[in-house]
Image 1: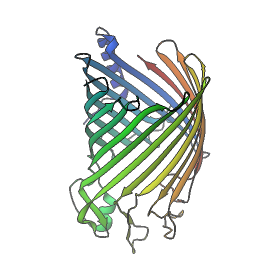
Image 2: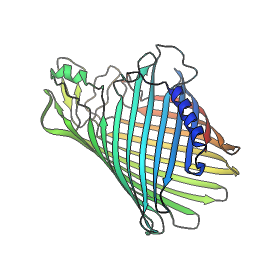
Image 3: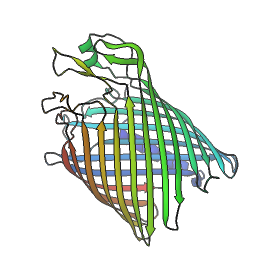
Length: 396
């Protein structure tokens, strides 16, 4: 199947925007954002390019009922510095469609049911074809948001969303080979239930605001049983529960806003992993993807002038696995310890409005990552990096 190129799609979106120019533009929103980044890790110099275009339209039926249609196209991949056809460089192309119905029952209660669809193409090199990637994804969503404003005079949002993840090209060839297990069915599709509770900023003191959020993700496979030495066998299917708690106090003094963000994440998974470092001694590591993570993000933002902001941020992230042992440089598992990673980052960013619809935002971030995982063939865990980016945005 042939897919229209990204630039052609963006041109079609712009033509459609011009068509909408004859309609009520107070109900149209669109955005085009271009970001070029430079990542330096000491050994590699990588250019990163992000293109995002949003288009939304509101169909109002009355003061209390309306429908929002939304479409987003996004490209992420190598930037202007990467031109070699065969260069090993990841890139993705996302298409997201959403339809949401807004219903206001009274001054304190709103209900927002929605359906959405995400189609993501992912490939590892420029000379691969779109639509044939191993990790291409289709995601189908259906859910509802309930927003209540009568508590503490701040909106509280309860969200439920059912999600179905489908990987049309995925095959776990390594596991099938090692276990001599043959099955023509797709083994990576799964169902997810997302439950979220969030509260907008509560004004505790005159200049002190606090916001809170809790997300629960319950993922279930209905076609992939728990892995053992014999393959995907047994009576139980894989499942996981993921909990994320966020807490964000912020204090405003003069033209400065000081933030101190906290986040804790707990992931429990029954998904196991085959250790094939030795072909004569294949073993299974249970609960390979279970972990807990904590991060803290202090920062301060300054309102320099009208529509001009300067932000300074720090971040510390620590992630510990419950059962996964680290690997040495030769990929051998170190069975008497558990894998953990940590990173420290610091950055500065600037945002400035240019005229009515344009803005630009340069930024710089330094990242230092450390881990007892020394095997880094597919993922790099130990590095220091400098990330410099420049974004240009048009918004109506």
